[in-house]
Length: 436
Image 1: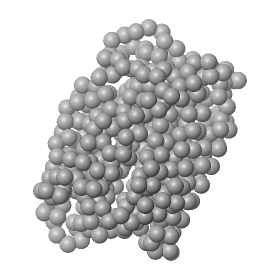
Image 2: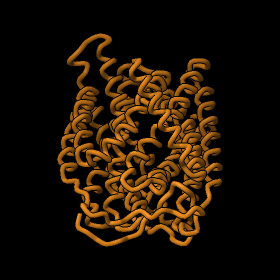
Image 3: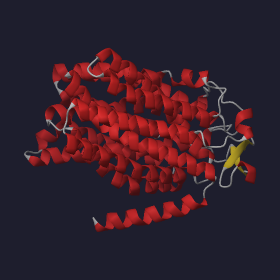
Image 4: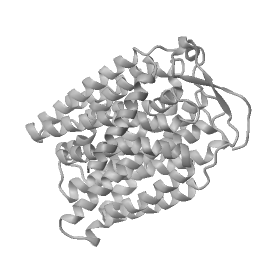
């Protein structure tokens, strides 16, 4: 434990030094992410318990609810295209504001299932629109060859915010108990912080070049086929963590919101070390190896979720499931490898966000249907078969990741941005085309 604390302290010190070297606009961006992360970390761990306690959903109904919840992810390319006239930073502000209204609306919805779904969809729309923006804006500040490292460092900083948000949620539920008033308090606080994040994003200065060059609405290229496949597999994989892993803890092991807050804190503490370390490993070892390792670990995580009760007894079972939950959470950080893979393949800088947006859409083509199938499987055959299927997907992800290749010659070269654009940032230009 002392080694973990020492390592975390060292990582935090390095992150602080890098923070001081960044531009003012980057600091505003990180501050906005941190504030929104605090709000999200309060709400996310409580949402599944809120659904169970308020609407008493069974596993199949919980799976069906993911269809409207994930629909905005499927439509993110369309949503982003409708806002193509806005620079990415302004689109991020709009997305964050929509998230805030959606979260706050849950407190007003009460036990009305239809109204809850409406605000949940708005919340989801903002979140999914922000996903590619977050990575793309971060990459705009990265130096050549340090993209994954900056993504990892940014992740470690926001992880501290996640710890704070989870701790606040844990304290609120521990103090007020699990009841409708507590859920409303969580939603209102989370919405307020997310709304503040949107205002902070508006403080970021938009360079003239970003205003003159709007994002393309859609980019579909053969060189991104492997990324498209990985996105679809990830859409199925993430539902294991978002939908069915919490449902195992809630319905099989009868755990409440405080447990999820504690697991989130544990994951975040470890993430302070894991995310920057993983970013450095991606830069050194390459995306293919890291993505294949992700599938390898996910295989055992899925088996742990589904079959821990058969290989162990007593308190050891729940500890195994807790460990799987934490590791599953940490493995989401590997998503930065997919981002840097796209960044290296993109022929034009503006293709990055468009391609990531399409990846989110393909992700949700699968994630809208998998929960329905998984929920039905749970009801008919039992939750073990849900995770057995997920383990099979993990094996498939290893196979697909083995085809990851990046160009030996850079398609784009970094150009140092003038002082007016902000120190520490970079932009790129197309210098030629090579085969992937």
